[in-house]
Amino acid sequence: MTDVVRPKTPEELAKMRRAGEIVAEALEALRRAIAPGITTAALDRLAETVIRDLGGIPSFKGYLGYPATICTSINEEIVHGIPGQRVLREGDIISVDVGAIWQGYQGDAAITVAVGEVNKRLLDLMAATQAALQAGIQAARAGARLGDVSHAIEKAARKAGFEVIREYGGHGIGQKMHEPPRIRNWGPPHQGMRLEEGMTFALEPMLSLGGYATKVLADGWTVVTVDGSPTAHFEHTVAVTANGAEILTRLNRPS
Ligand code: MF3
Ligand code: CO
Image (cartoon, rainbow, N blue to C red; front, side, top):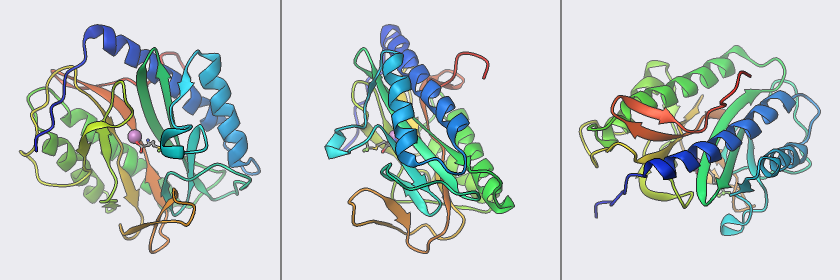
């Protein structure tokens, strides 16, 4: 079955830019707060405060029963870790994933942050994941095909010597957080739907220092690597333009 994806109108894109800016502000606050000794529950409260102060609504809370505003995924946790009393320790890496709604439109983004001083290999993994996201964003131009985006992400990851997680990926986004299509972070180019200006996607590569096999923990949410390898995750909500994608989840002020 082929996905029907309706490009957003300029008015819708304006709302998604504002939703994205709220997400970016929450991520910036998290980035500054992340340090040895803080709990993931404190990070969750911080993000909720920022989102609500800016007039947004957290989108994750209550989604399929999810209990928090953000996802906090530490080390071998890939995505969907639930905030709680766990304390961050020097040497950890933590992925924080934030979603917010503004006037009915969604923003969704994630970053991975080092907690204090971390191993050089972990810094390489984080940089490669960010580079893979940038490669996907550049490939998401009008006239290209969805497989070109997937392929660009995988190629960047492999060039850096890392595996991409294969069982999770990006998605369409708009009035709902998850809209068609699903976007793999791997696969052949020149395949899949044709991209048109104004289509909006969440691109979100996840890279592993080891293997790509995953499992879900008993809490029903936290996704981890089977071999315990650390992973990184970067995500932006983007809009397709004639020359690559526009990042909607961007801070529109100097940080
Ligand atoms: N960015 C995540 C995703 O696209 C957000 C979902 S977390 C959930 O899967 F808790 F809301 F499900
Ligand atoms: Co997402």
